[in-house]
Amino acid sequence: MKNRFLLWALPILMAAVSCQQQRPEGQAPASTTTANPAAPGFNAQGSDPAAIALADEVMAAMGGRKAWDETRYLHWNFFGRRSLLWDKYTGDVRITFLPDSNAIVLNINSPAKGAALMGGQLVSSTDSLQALLQQGKSIWINDAYWLAMPFKLKDSGVTLKHLGADTTQAGAPAQKLQLTFEKVGDTPQNKYEVWVSDTSKRVVQWAYFPTAEDPAPAFITPWSGYEQQGSIFLSGGRGERSLTEIKVLEEVPQAAFQLP
Image (cartoon, rainbow, N blue to C red; front, top):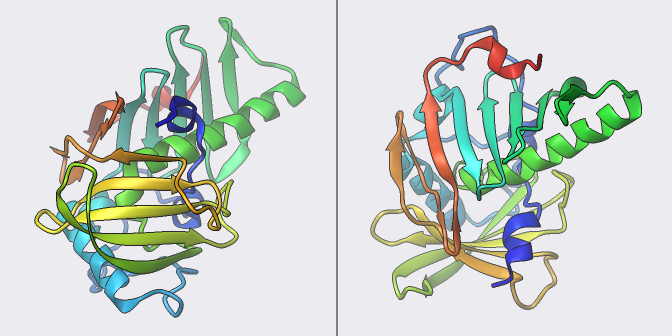
């Protein structure tokens, strides 16, 4: 596996997240009678019924759709390079670069608005700030997908295919899913293959293909180290590196999404 792909490949985070509607402060999403409804634009017609059913099993094994929808604040450290704080209700994101504490704050629903702190100074140049805010959104797209992909199997633009039974590189029995995309995220040409454990029904491995036509993946990594955070389960183990400091937070001061 090549580290440059592990660190910099920009996976797709679907429009169901990146274009989510803002909610009033502290208000959870309304509950639904459907266990795991697909996001608008999910390609249900082009997806296999077996793949859709498996995606629903994954959501249940991760804590369930209601628990995911009601999870508001997520914090994690992306491979020691930066830490992120995300308010899923409002779309506010803070990215802190390590170890120098440069930072970008933005709203993924309004990415042209935000602020950046570089070298201890607020960035005042409009062009420089807009470039940094765009960079910040791309970072969030990438880093959040590395954390939350199992919750996003039925997002907008996704087509799911069931590739049958397989074993992981560790020899564990699993069912394999294929994800392809249309008109979403930064890199809709990507493809993923995802191994779902026969026993836990959680994602235990994934493979990344830069384009859907590639005969072999650019990398394959495990998804390991699941722990319960709040009401959901999240994994940080990605083979040679790990996501760390994974937390579901109940409350976060608004100042966390502001820069001095």
